[in-house]
Image 1: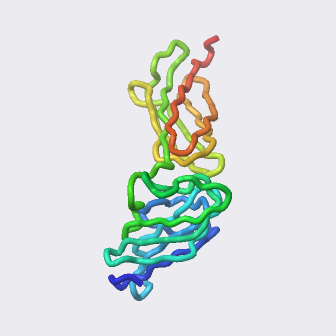
Image 2: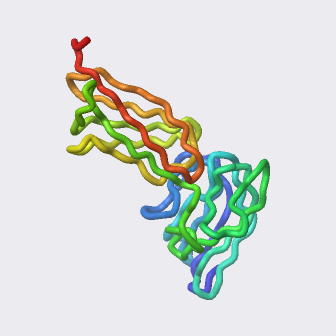
Length: 204
């Protein structure tokens, strides 16, 4: 229990529909670890988030300081478990212990920017390298299961942000063109670029 009288819980779940709250740190259940905050009579879920990477993550202990910052300890098998810039150790191998600090709203980690996520910058062009606007671009993660859809801008560019290390399948499509489907391996904390090429149907 925090000094504010609210109840804080850390644990693990395999439920794909475990409740999280809007704006929380992570709403995707990848490794199973969660932190939740409820009011004192347990009638309202105030904040709830997942915490982990693409492996198995276990939260074993939780503490709250006088400013209602939340500290969680446990162990993880995720090589992409989220760490922060200038942390004591940002590499995870096999099974490692972790210590994480979050704000009271469970909306962000404390101690610096997350160095484990990255973004994919891309462009959609035709066979003559002309940009294609409003192409539908879909991303799907192999391990994380993350799925996002965006559209290319006037200059043909698009981007996907806050991505964990994974192998992603990216598909671009637009009416009148043949689809282009590519696979891209995204390393932990390293941005990547990709060019999607669409050929007009009936054009050889």
